[in-house]
Length: 166
Image (cartoon, rainbow, N blue to C red; front, side, top):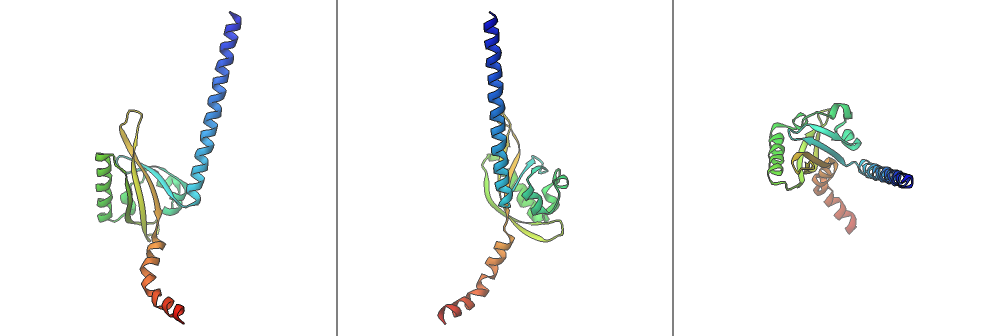
């Protein structure tokens, strides 16, 4: 009987050790992916159902030029114009009703200095263990420089044509 108790304790220790190793492994993987997203300047954030930020990564803080402390709790209307705010609200409402993610929602936002930024955002729902929608997950890129380069492309084409035909 004492052998059974000892064997049971050894099994419990082994399970706890395996669980600890699994948790450490998952935390390491999470950190790896967070680092990748941050290095690529990909905004990763979460909002509650009202649109208030509940999570933001370092890249998101850099994009908005605000500390995490200042961003948490902030509503998206704080950095969008009224017409953009309405467009975003309608998109979130549609995602909430259908559960279908939206990719490439492009809109204008303002950074903390009031500079116009063009953002390309994908949004999906966050569900709890019962399947109830509790918020939204956002992945976004600041595509301002890309859009400005696209706008200036026609101006550079004649110069390239001349250079290539010379």
